[in-house]
Length: 140
Image (cartoon, rainbow, N blue to C red; front, side, top):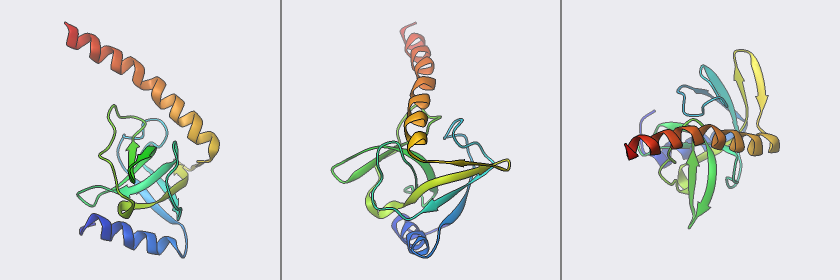
């Protein structure tokens, strides 16, 4: 998709007013939570809450599916479960909607309250060895 990030997100949000949208997911940024090839079902929602998985647009108008890490001064912080660093903060105009389920190799996974807490905890636990290894390599 090309165009302004806010325009792309706005068009998809408008579509979500009628019905949920399935978006294909490609890339390892969500770690073990959502593995490609997969598709996610996105629904309309007001504001991201900590731990929820959301779809949003980047500066390049690319659609990204990552977990919310919080909101500060109206900007939302997102982070892929399989990444070390958070994404650049996103304004509300670039939000598309909340991911409620995914389909990977024919298996459906719901993303409800349990997914928020377990996904966040497991993602943090997986990053600890990487952070420790990186820290030790820098000290050499």
